[in-house]
Image (cartoon, rainbow, N blue to C red; front, top):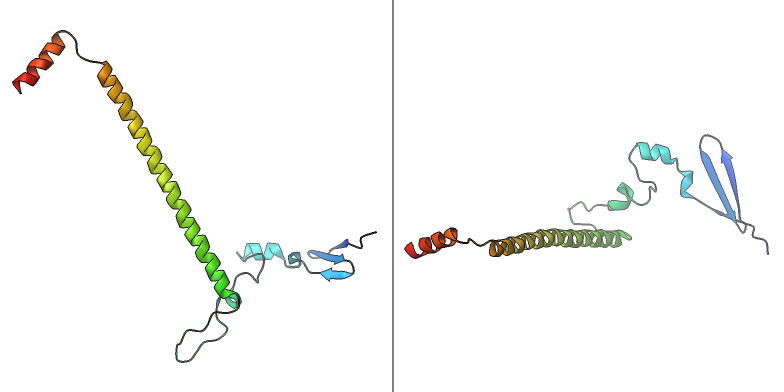
Length: 136
């Protein structure tokens, strides 16, 4: 069975991608002039973010809040989930950094304690130290 999928490329002012699969035309985001959008700091897909997407469709004159639009609550929940996950991961990184610093400090103290126990005064220094502790 031969697939009827084909792509026709036309180069004019910008590249147009016409995609035909089994006789059905499929639109593509590449129809938008991506360089123009990128230069102006806009998103690649204008339907994902913007005034028409984020703001309510109408306002009440008496100042009551308008209900959330279609899929707006889902977008808000998704953003809250992202924020919660970021906070959780940053907390884990902070804990790991503090734990690493604490473990390094404990290791340093342990090696210092071992060195202090190994290097004990001998002879006259030991007698002086004992005499000093007795006088106190």
